[in-house]
Image 1 (tube, rainbow, N blue to C red):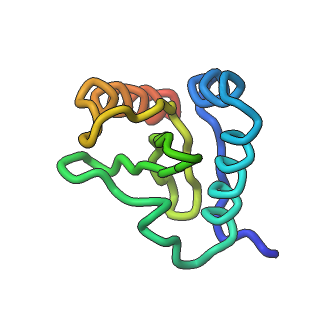
Image 2 (spheres, helix red, strand yellow; image 1 turned 60 degrees about the vertical axis):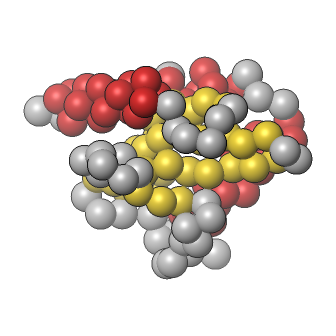
Length: 113
């Protein structure tokens, strides 16, 4: 299947999270990332913008009863830049995780200058 978007990692934030996960979680993350790369319309169940942020998106992964989030942003429209991930343990996304994503996004765009 042709790719609609390209996914890149910024530094090792996402990789550090990814390698710490079980194989079943990594498989589901890979599945969702393939959807993001290949589908023109991504279901909101898997990918959505976080309200109240300046372009921070979350990739949503659920394995059994565990919920995982990977923060990212878009760059040049068709480029998805992965930041960091975490296991979500409450109903609301923790503000400290959103602040971390905003700081990494700033670091990413500053590094492009």
